[in-house]
Image (cartoon, rainbow, N blue to C red; front, side):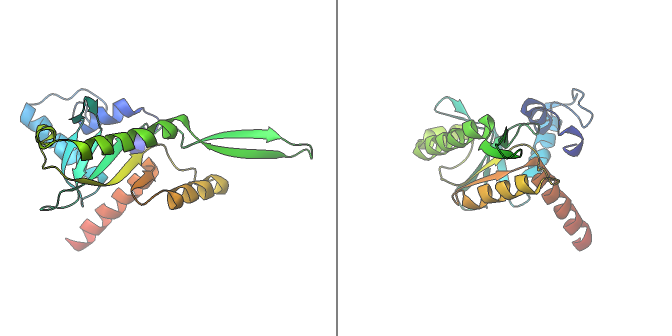
Length: 199
């Protein structure tokens, strides 16, 4: 589904995760319980290591996309911000130079520029939240150990883009990670192969 819909926007992907649409993009019909199970299974795309996913929870009147627990018995969480698969990681500006060549500048895209402070704001609001606010989310109060922004696709055919992306990922703090939908699909493929080979 993800591979077939890399040109779609984040609302479409969120509707699929929420079980509102099927794998063909058509509205789902089913009981609330069936849709709840579908939603729970689709949240597994983020990784089998995460448990107890919460979608679009409120904290101080702001809605985060996904909050998931790192492990049972520990109140450590990963906050996931979903952006469109068709969004850009970089805004690329090409300029002609005096030598008849061109220089290329890589700037963070507007979507990344908004997502980074947005996810840090959600993290701070969650960590400053009261027990009552966490109870509304359905989780015990804890610490957000990691923030993950899911956006765009990799440009595997462009070594300069790849180099800038790897540098960006390497130089972000340990508490934030940028992942493309390409990376997520590769991770899912590896997980499926491992499960098939070891079960």
